[in-house]
Image (cartoon, rainbow, N blue to C red; front, side):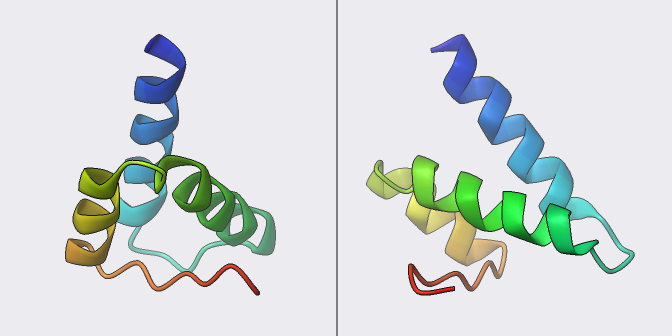
Length: 57
């Protein structure tokens, strides 16, 4: 549970950044989104924040 919350906080901080993300940050954001999207609620929250991630990228 703590691990999941930590990942969610990290993803939230990446989403909240105003400056463009570095390549590694963008990759991390996509990976965290995919890992956390196993729970439908998280998918809804990420879509609400405008995260556009596909499994192919």
